Image (cartoon, rainbow, N blue to C red; front, side, top):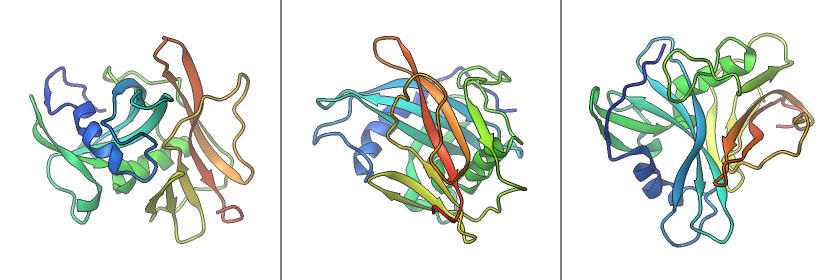
Length: 219
């Protein structure tokens, strides 16, 4: 179980993202600095208890349209070998000391736990309170057996695609869209998906598709 510490981070997570987001191919803001606000998210537990796993939802009001982004992050007590390209930045944690924050799509611990969530082997946790499940995060899986790991992440203008050697692709929606009222339908060919909710600046809550696991027929 991850323990949520009530402490200070320097720089803050939003400050890290303000510098990092414009470098992403899926970023849709303008030339100016992002104007970010926290809109939601959830956590997953690392079974080994070493890596912090958080899915952050932020809104960016810097452009003419409000954009909502999904940013999976991992927090480590030491650099992750071979992941220099995925480093978002470092922070000083008031309890844990220096933490290395990574784009979690490139961290095998986060990918493994996201698959466990989809397959029903893990439970989403509240973003801000220790040992409290986040039941607003809903995962479905209609495939057979466990999905083999070994995904390679690629970012493009549409988001992040994690491709596996056996032909399955795990797609993360980096730019989130509120779904119409009613059940959220996954795309054709999906064998698993994750939905969640976030808060708009006016205080209303909306739901949308966060991630989709697709078979080789569609990948």
